[in-house]
Length: 398
Image (cartoon, rainbow, N blue to C red; front, side):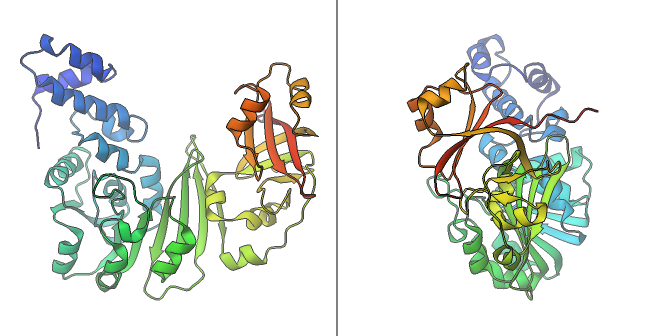
């Protein structure tokens, strides 16, 4: 691992907000400095600025290649992951840059960070010391070799398998990731009381549950309404109907959470109605988790259509886990009618269970993005296409 001189660290700090391409063009001004290498550190810091503020704030922290930074958890999702488990020993078998290990170390007496890339393992160990995480032991080896040689027993084994193939293409199926968790499962259960597995949100949850078996709980985690990851807590004798948690981490540090079981989802009775005074769009975690009926049942809402996943009520539900709108009218999918109601020819458009895409609607109607109007193109309970004109629910007066 490269250890930077005080002058090199000063260069990184002084130029951390500069355009990297411009810095490279000016490299001849600094013939005594390895500018190309320092610019890579600046690029990594810029990419990590929002997701890893603790690391970026420390001037001596070293960053790996940009790909490793892109693949790592954000601090917000790592902190939430750490909140769902605790104990004496957790082993992070796919340690990477170490963000997850760092937050697990706040909940466990000891954490082992296992990473097969020697440079990345060294960088993580160095940063752990800088950031005061003294209860993390960094080990440079593969997950498989570590497990074979580990003679103790952990409370939790954590895995975030690499989701890039041999040609760096993105993969999502469990058997295509590295390490192959499905092959390792028997050995994992020999070495720990529980396994916490992180997967891509692109992986079908029902397929994963069928392949993994022995799943006690599932968490679908969204950050600022963008679905980021799905967690599976595996235990050898877990029931076949795991609790499912849809979690959306909000910018102010709070969260929206909804818990349900698949049997509950299937048995919940849902009523249907035309749009009433308020319209609701669930957050992405709820939509990914499949809590379509449960969210209606838990919040006393009507659905517009079995496949639309839009909800409505006469009275405002202030704590709905998603976006809430005031309905201002219902219309047809007709260019003349739409433009007559939009004098600025601007609106925010969402489609739910509708034949045309947002791009197709904009092309056909000429409606531009933006403004205070929100249009929902959907299908109603009578199987008819509709356009719902909305405005956001006003923020409460403090």
